[in-house]
Length: 320
Image (cartoon, rainbow, N blue to C red):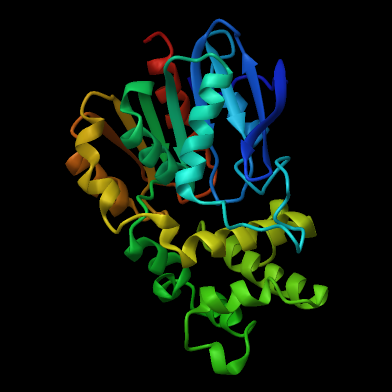
């Protein structure tokens, strides 16, 4: 199958209290008695997308999506200056996923995640392997320091030097040779709203340019909303400056927990933000996973990536 499934609307949705004053938006669509599956969005801070609904056969799957803390329709929103992100961390996101699973009376489910969502999916599955039937990961990241440094601390500049210099130009001269993540995190909380929005736009220009080749010259469509880009930039820098609260290499070292879970890893050969070596190294320590390389794809959505994700969800739809 090469065409996405038809556009559908949720048949259930709500707000789940997850603690520390956070309420997480969730929705389900497809067959209420179908095979449960959950999609973990990227970013962190991107929010769920209707496009993911079209990757799953609506007659076979009960698809769950939710907006992780601070983004999308979840509250409080990270675009608000007084929103405290102290409780927004990987450990709590894993707990939120489990709380949502129990809230929806789901015993086990397929876990799908892309980019940051693949890191979160690995962390969740290694913590709760008995709750995961299969995994589909794309644009694979594994939460290592080297991966964060590659994307956000200058490694990727070898392919995008103009865009990297533009990002550096957005912080004071004295901070340009330091940790760019720390510099932007400070600017994103500046009392002056103009400073905050300028920093968010500069950060999202970098995020817009680097997924694919050739680089995009302006803001990606999803970043046109000022509140969206401010929340996104704040959440990303919050996670990166803490290395996602993951011990370096832990998700690869603990991959033995995935031994009984079938998996499909889909990665573009020319994915700049999530280089194919990430998926290759994960496959080495997870023999039950199959690696599918899409030769003409990068990090963003493409015909080739969509085709392989559809094949993956179709392959797993009958298994329980």
